[in-house]
Image 1 (spheres, rainbow, N blue to C red):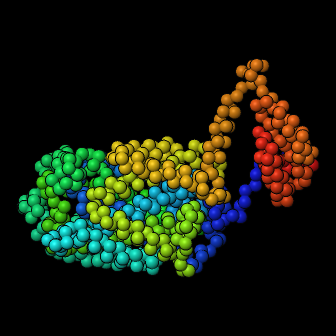
Image 2: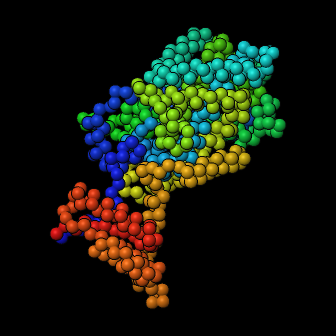
Image 3: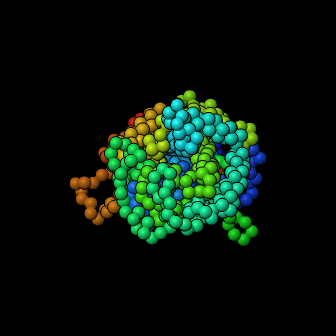
Length: 619
């Protein structure tokens, strides 16, 4: 005699909405190797689909326009401290995201898809909107940086005023990146290659002419080319001196010297928190590959080859980009601190242009950096919005989920995101946009770590990621660190951000659509109930605290008998059993599932406090 306990049969055929990470490694390898990719989907690889987009966003506008200023304010040691915590936030989040992504099949929507299919539509939708807003505001931040460089190079004495020049240039540039985004991911990849050619030409020119200059830094799409030629100290046009790499200059710039000659921090002097908030975006951008999950050939799972496993684009590409960026930034922090005096760093945003063989070479590098970062942010934002719209979480946004026939490009979402970014562009100030983006980044990264934490702490059997370098203490550290940094940098922005998340969560809880994705709250409840049930010890019981436990197996759903047992339980455990006779298989499990659903309806209608349990009994 064999008994199989059956609580509920999940609808495994609902592939359109169900998150499908919960397969064994063998099943995942088999599906990945036997399923042919769709001809209408993009098939980007690890390098051009994850590594390059991530690095292009990490090494962006902040490096060229604010890194030197931050070193002059916080000092080399202070900047290294900021960079350490910012990169720690990044690494912990990458580890958590990689664990979730490697748990199975990934669809479009990136971080939103992971969170919503793990924590449910309420939490996923609320955080998905935050991710979308941070990328939409990021588009504006990068393009405003682009426009600031154009304004201070060619429109210094414009009658329009700096702000309107910045708004006009940024808006015009936005139109060009929208055109690329509307074409699709393959155009995005090709543009990166063309920009590489432009940057290579700049590097070649700088190498030929660099013998008469002290420091030339060019930004390539994968590395920063640094050409150092020691020469005598000379003054810069906008103030300060360039000394070349000298230990005395490094020692003088080692410690903080907070001022605000450029009014970056408002009316008061800067401090460590203000500098952190402005330069924090230099450690972001590593989620760009995750946002392109729907365009990747092998986003998160291992693909079995003849004798080894390959693939796993998101973990490998993201971590490689973060490591590369760490090497570049740490090198530049020491180089800037050793080559420019404090006055040049604190008061001169344009020292790059003034030390190159010609200012336009450095300007080209800065403009390409801002342009590619803005393009990447637009791509990420539009794909997140497309995924949210397709899930119909918010009324009236369903049309934004439509994609093109080839590549499923989110053209409607691109247009909507461009309009929202245009609104952010009207702020027209990089130092105002950067702290706003920082707050959005922190809460979004905390949500990714929280998702991984919950899945690992609850011990969900189906959570078996192939990426083994994440554990719950690291995920917990990621949650605490990101929230702590957000509150420390700007409590007001932190409060507003959390209020927005809470309001979206409540809205989706009250009026959001029902989904079949599963909700981690059920796993949390089960985990806690099981935990405390195991603490019960009958040896420590006493008669005066005794409660009845009833198992009732009626021949049919006999209402009077069921109601009688409900009265007899008196606060105890009441289980209504049901037995399906026959060999265990698809037909009997389907029958048991239907009978279980009927029992659930009976319990709800009669307002019983009971637990139904169906069993398949084979004789």
